[in-house]
Length: 185
Ligand SMILES: Nc1ncnc2c1ncn2[C@@H]1O[C@H](COP(=O)(O)OP(=O)(O)OP(=O)(O)O)[C@@H](O)[C@H]1O
Ligand SMILES: [Mg+2]
Image (tube, rainbow, N blue to C red; front, side, top):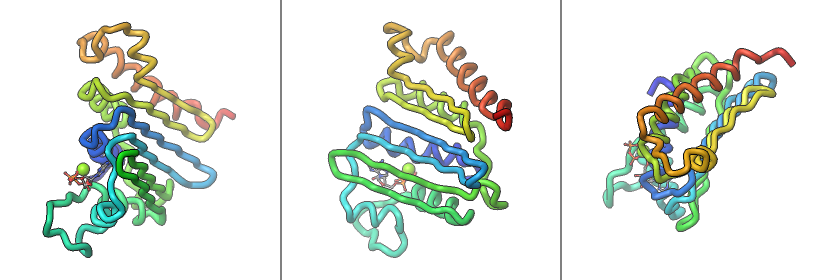
């Protein structure tokens, strides 16, 4: 994977598969601290302690019982290659929280990529899941809560063509403006 947004896509798809009702995606860029921190929290089915160990390190733990993918180990590796760190907390029946912290200016830090399109795709394709998306860049913040969007839409589907187009534009505009105003404070 070459972009952080693609890692996010993969990790969030795990949350969707875990039947989460609410998935929170938070990206915090702190130039002064030189960190980029991605936190994905869901209230899905969660994992046992044993399962957590297995998904983080699929090669050292016996994997005879079932196939375990590489989405989580690759995300962890991407963070660690930038001098960052990785945390995973999960509880059966409660949910999962995954945090990856990257060295913002590190040469090996993957670009964020097209996070507006990634979030758009996730939101539109999983209409029955709610998303709370927060992206902070220094003092600037963009927040999108699909529960609020759905209330405004009053029953109109997020997959309606006009709504889809509007949502993508909204995400793109707000993402762009996060960076445009940086440094003005
Ligand atoms: N948020 C989550 N809630 C519950 N279980 C999870 C969650 N994230 C991961 N898992 C479990 O860990 C496994 C491994 O996840 P991972 O993303 O590493 O690989 P994968 O989704 O199986 O395959 P892929 O390589 O296609 O992503 C999942 O199959 C799932 O059983
Ligand atoms: Mg996965």
